[in-house]
Amino acid sequence: MFVNIVNISKSYKTEGRFFRKSKRKVIDDITFSIKKGECLGLIGESGSGKSTLSRIILGLEKPEQGKVMMEGEPISKWMKNKKGGASVVFQDYTSSVNPSFTIRDIIAEPLLAVGDNKNLDERINELLAIVGLPHAAVHKYPHELSGGQLQRVCIARAIAIKPKFIVLDEAISSLDVSVQAQILELLHQLKEEMEITYLFVAHDLQAAANLCDRILFLYKGKIVEEADSANLALAQHEYAKKLLGSVMPFQGQ
Image (tube, rainbow, N blue to C red; front, side):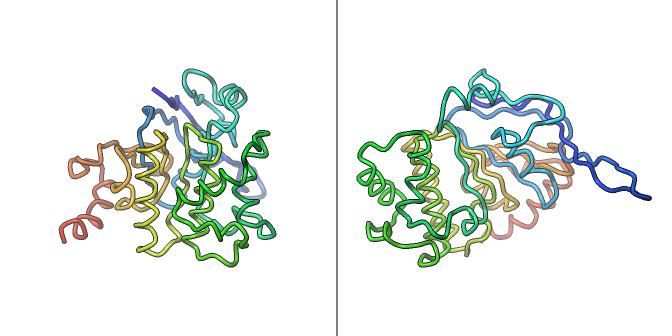
């Protein structure tokens, strides 16, 4: 397996009654794996713990219990040995970029961070072409682009360092439906052409079913269902059935 998440748990301290501190468990003993080249969907409602879990997988937060292994190594060691091996695209594309940077500066940022500035402008132009943006975009600033265009810039930045693994954390949820379809098609192409392994974190089951090979349903900090995208109708847990019930009418049209 490419990624192994083993018995991960995470709690946060909260204010209890009479100023007493208490703990709220956000992730509860979660175990799953992601195959190399696979797109795994992680579906859950707000507050289910999915973003916390994605940050733990990326090494941005530490779990209370359990471990994350990448290609057989602890995530911290893997990240250190393979600079640029993992990347992320967040939901809020506006806060994900520096508004004072040009598009060229934004895409160049991860390359410069790892000391890779060879043929920089040529590579930036190639990345823009890959995500379907014109060369003229290099001179623009974030506020001059549409939401869909700016999210394409964020994807270009994420793939600039040729990562093996990308976390897409609600990466299309704030976009219009027509733009979502375009971004999903782009992610499909990148998966095939660059052999990227994805974790697609979302609350939108229909989008996940379109892109992902397999889907995990996260409910109140626990994985309650796992299913291949082609066999979602076989899901048994009530939460999964509820989500499927809201999607199936659209699939049948």
